Image (tube, rainbow, N blue to C red; front, side):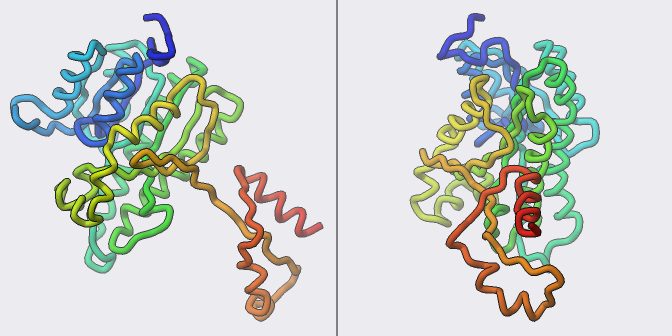
Length: 308
């Protein structure tokens, strides 16, 4: 297929996890519309209204009906070896893997004191281990091809914090760390790794998996945030012309913003005591001049400049 502005991903292959519904479905359909062949990964969940067809298979049917190419692969990315199997299916069907969108996720809401280790491990397993397993399996193919696009799904819950969601927030910052480390690992290569922090009305918006309940929680806000709107930023991050890497973007309802990690100018005195820290707390926390390191080396330079 000829690559055009309308089909910039022609000849590329994208793997989208958790793609049977919500954001994943929107991402899969959007990438397919841009010309990519898509591996639609999700659990074996019956679709509505035809329980004989899984949600992943239903998305494949939608893509094919629109003239695209797709296959369904049923697996939990949290399971050991699942990433390898999903990528193997992609290679068998399409002979390459260029794009990975780590979208699969689960929730286990509740105060930390009421959540047990199994809840914690389930959430970390899907979000962090799942993103690792799938990305790790696709990584050698991207390195061999000299091209790759990886998107991980973070959340404002992890970046800024929210009550009663410690496992989810921890997982969502965990994948940001992974994205930034991998972006550093492939510096200078055409392999980009970025994170999105989406807001959209999906079943995941509510711990009960209820879209109506999710909308009720924040009134009309979520109703104005369709999943497909988030996918437009994912599409650009997967585009061959997009050269950003190691970055985080808040996306939802038509708004797109970059999330940055900043430091204050700080205060310096070698050999200081905790009393000195207390007495200079205002200077340490002064936000009038904020710095934005984009790499560990940038932060080290701040220490070197302070040390003279």
